[in-house]
Length: 342
Image (cartoon, rainbow, N blue to C red; front, side, top):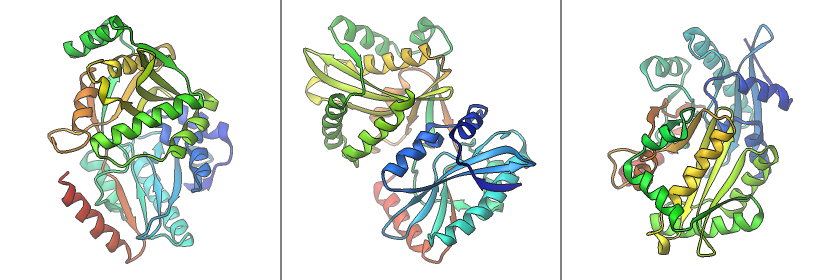
């Protein structure tokens, strides 16, 4: 096996379309988005006899405690069911990232593989020199998925009764869902997003981050804002990303003054219906938490799970230390994790 950089969008996207486990975080456009935000990226391919077997989008992340290379929800491995294939890819890619990391003078390499959480997959990374990252997560590791190949009625019947009723109530009360990514809708989403941030006390995304993400992904019709309008005012929004066989509930926001109007339920339902129209098989509600009432995602997780579906757990984020300075990162992130209590 050899690792080399991929510079052709079609080659990259054609490969992604053949893989069972993939994510918009490994799309060509996600790499373009990161370049716009000022990050240095590499698109690496792992080839076996000229056949592309795996790919990894690598992003150089600048941090105060030391920069690192990050592979979000990757590497993407074509034949993930074959044990030797996964092991060979991880070993070959690990060696390449070690060399690249030293050239870029980073402290460590961090990967967030979209592989099932089990001892077998964990041992593959351990043998390649990786260790469990101290951080809880950088991208969701416990996700909630919904099979949307079923009929609309079957999906509705699989929901909590209260969710079905709230979707119907929102329609009766005149909530209208608008699909639009024009700047006025981005600005409105962000205003509501900041209100949601204050209410739930989590770290917000910058406006330029949201805008750049939408501007890049919408070029290939991979994203849309589902804005819920009530009484001539947008009171809730959901940003859905469409990639491969999945649709991802990526961002959401709502106005607290209208919390008795179930607009968020209808906005997300319309997102699910749009994904069905596109022939997408799975709706990914993204990250959830369980049994952690103090976690800022706890209430949102109950909201997501009410739509029906099932849980999937991915392998924990893996770190490959390259410098003694990694110990500083490890200690700081462990302390933060303990303080947060989750």
